[in-house]
Image (tube, rainbow, N blue to C red; front, side, top):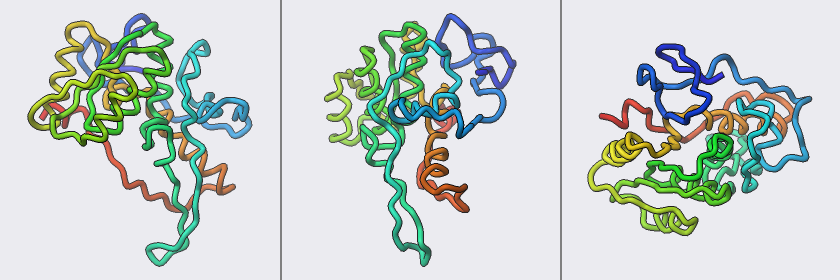
Length: 230
């Protein structure tokens, strides 16, 4: 269950806020992620074969571009025999696609046809692509210094790009102002729905290795909501 980590109020059943409308707290999910190998559905596309791990209503549409199931390639590095998970082979070129798929599915289930997002690159491109697949209009607020090729990728998916001068936090402030005017904010930093998609990489590693890996190195990060406001 999705709930406010501050006042414990459950996520509204008829709205799509990115922060708690009661206390302005941050949403999180209750309990641990639940993975059962016997509930995997191989007939479903991409990460959706792990649908039983997503906190989504059964009626939620499957929004997929074939994300997940990326190869595990063995090589020698750091004086060790290691395996590299090739996440750049996801549809838009990053692991963000894993989280965007269930997030967009949730939004479409709630009847959302247009939404905004802020990003310096990969998250924006991912949301633009999946929004297009779900027949949603997307508007992405980006810092003016964002990579030209990445902006071209976002626009190629049909999203509107809003360039915001100044630091990354200015783009976050601009998109929040848009949200205050009633636009749905499909935030990959605030909404927890994407976490279930990101977790599928762990299930894939278990499937590919046949056991739980001893060590996983993840050279990625994400700006926390409070950092966007600094």
